[in-house]
Image 1 (cartoon, rainbow, N blue to C red):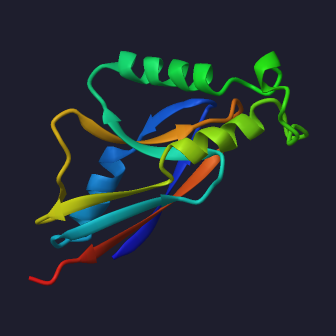
Image 2 (cartoon, rainbow, N blue to C red):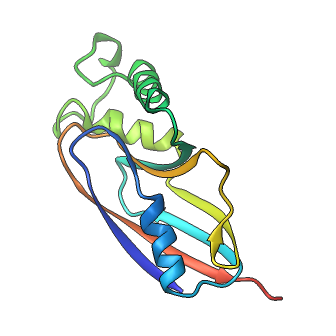
Length: 142
């Protein structure tokens, strides 16, 4: 079972798409197995993160920006890949420290996520993008 999901971003931020994945699993009559999600871009990431308190997202984005500021920050003067804008190379760096794929167990067609866990695309670029996430569920041998 496989599909892809398009996520429209409005700039840097976390974009939850847990419901879309859950709906696809339900509609497809998903069996028990392992779901793999893979983002097909080099300047964004995927995360399983808390979805109850939006302050978690705010703090995570602030931490990432502090860890890896834009290329026009004096601390980033060593960067050479800057022709695509001050957020491009830092976006690649952020994508190198956060996952670009996830594996989530699925039992009887439902993802085994914790109570406050959601699936997010993390957009690292400042401008809007159309992102694609490939999804594949491999059924377990029962």
